[in-house]
Picture 1 (cartoon, rainbow, N blue to C red):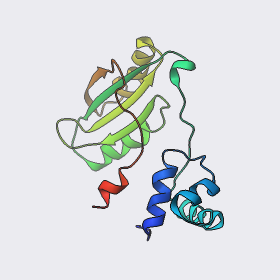
Picture 2: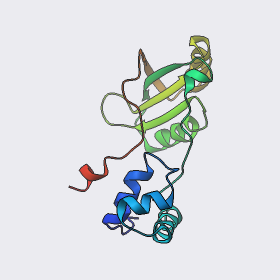
Picture 3: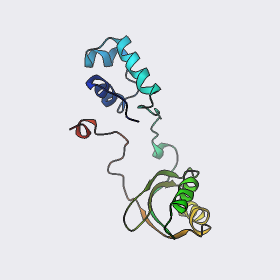
Length: 159
């Protein structure tokens, strides 16, 4: 369900999606609202789930070494129930950072983080080889991250 937003809401969202810790005082100064108005608007954006969550973005290099993988998965037989079952299963794996049901040659695109290739091999056994509905999968190893993020191009989407 679409929520009614005005230009000030969009401005607030633009700032919050790059710095969710910005104070209401600072944000109010930037966009020309009182801190109380900023608080009310942010609360409404949270309550209506326009702002779904505000996670911390971790620097994986400072925590543990890992490999990023892009995995394309083809489900064997056509059918909504098979895709639904795969969706339910794949969201249970912490290694899967993002999962997309897609058009084209493959049915799903997964973005994953694993400790090493042994870890990935264990994952493939549990997630793919033991699932008779998975016809095939193709893995690409990310050599370097050029751009990552979850910020929406708000101005471009509103044109």
